[in-house]
Image 1: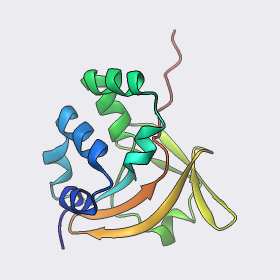
Image 2: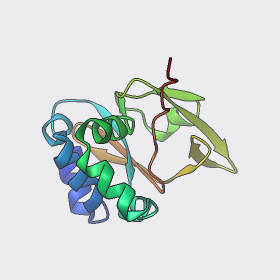
Image 3: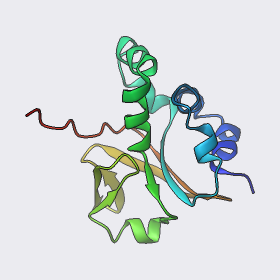
Image 4: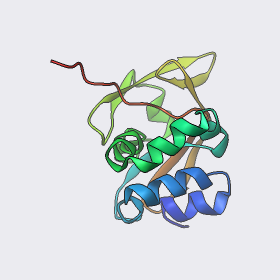
Length: 140
């Protein structure tokens, strides 16, 4: 069994995620001990973001790091636990909303878990079909 990064790279459908994690300097973290639960957007999920917006995001390391860490929950949270939760705290610091609709897990009313419980040595990957954006803090 491989770690989260190697498992995702081997799957072949997370090239944009791997590029983003590299740009944000998060590869070593997610190769670390963990455990981590990664909500992994596919290349198709990233393709839903307009190209110019995606390029801007990849060029802004702070914002990119915020978006990517919003896809990580500390600990190993399998689908059997996810389906009992209404929200989960992300490494980014904000909560991600969880609902089960027609037997499928939906995050923040928009992203669907398409494949759950891909095991890795340092956690678990749940594949999602949209990129999650952390809430924007209210300006004071």
